[in-house]
Length: 254
Image (cartoon, rainbow, N blue to C red):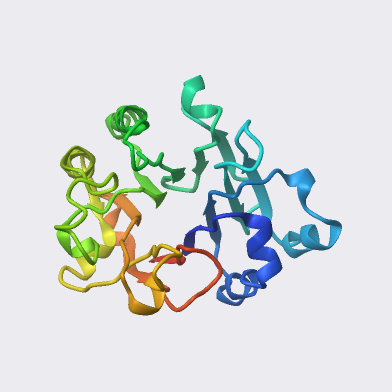
């Protein structure tokens, strides 16, 4: 099984850039997109034909042109659930839960704490509520994969300039502590287990020619339940793929 996660920073823009061709060439079983900034009725007929062979499940934000997630799958009979049942989070279209045969896949766009930190509490509350939900699933014997844009770099190896960003949202101690907490609660950062010392990033600001200079952050993750992790074969950061300020990340399972 192959799963791709990608914060596309505008789904319609991605389609216009032709970047979807790379996804098609990979032939994934599931695609989890974040920050789609669109609703299905905003796609042209030509754009909609791109997905004739895939089932699509949308969770757009109430606010136009903002946030939103989209899960696409080869299997057309999967059960999908939007959100957490908490209005202040669900109105922003941040989660799709998909039941696969023996695990539950979460496509998640975690909130950004923003430079002035005015959304920091909202972000940390979101981390807490999602973990509560995952704890309940684990207690029921379920296995879980959380993928998407976590909007947090976990460790110093996960961004180019950790000291300069020690007081920047996305690398604050209280944000990083939540990633630690997920790991303490039975999750594995799949990429970092396979590549404990590899330096790769998944996001680069559009400013300062950052991507060309590889001044980036690793913000896009697969957190996998410990008991499910033996089924994971590899995690690939496709940092050569252009189309967004993030790059796609691939999970390969047995």
